[in-house]
Length: 337
Image 1 (cartoon, one colour):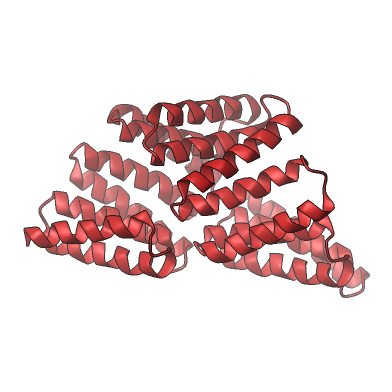
Image 2 (cartoon, one colour):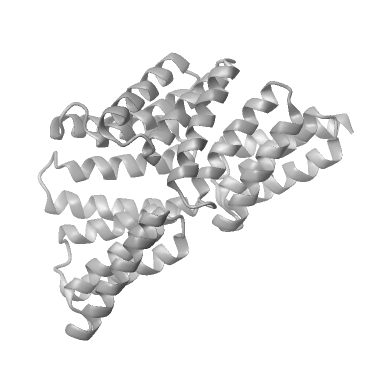
């Protein structure tokens, strides 16, 4: 967290100097705003990140030719902010604009394409379109394998993402294999408490949980949480993901009070870090509803399920599997009342 604050201070000081020394829309301002936006993004402060990245794009539109590769970077950054805010249609639009520019400006297997395919894949993954997501993640990995050495840290993310899709598709051995390859690369390439390691542990934990190997799942989730607690600001949304995972395992183990405690910590962080209709909040409400259902507290379960349904209907496509899931949950709890 301290490193982000230092970086932010340094970038803001650089911007102040440029404001004194340069004319108002000098191209160097675009880089300053981009840098500031990237720090806010890594801190999980998405509205501030969006404002800075949009200012950077605005300057580029004045100073750079229309299909210059620098535009692709701006649209990509804006897409990533929207993605983390749960605004998937806006994210998809920005990511596709970035890819469109790259296709004009760059050679066919340029490494930047890999990031675009990965990002678009992540939007489809969150929209529940898993076959599209898998195809894009594999295209991203293919390009990176051509462009990068075998254990380069940029190879870890596509393996992790491919693992997540296989997990959703119920292909657990393929999922575990992909997540373990991601972790192996991250361990070679990164310092021991880098946030990307936490993502690999979280992916492995989720597969173990779905395979019913709860002690392995809990151990991996706790390692993920440990790393994120060291590496990230206290209310970063990724911390909520770790607490949520731990809660899901406790729920499956029948330890409902521990599950509820972890879910409530996750929800507390999400309420600070995310917009009110973010799909991640709905996931927490749905999961808390499921714990109450298992505890026999059906009216509380219904309240949480209905909150989840309301948000998912606003934020996801109508045919998304999460909407079908929460409708089933509501039907089940109503039968018990």
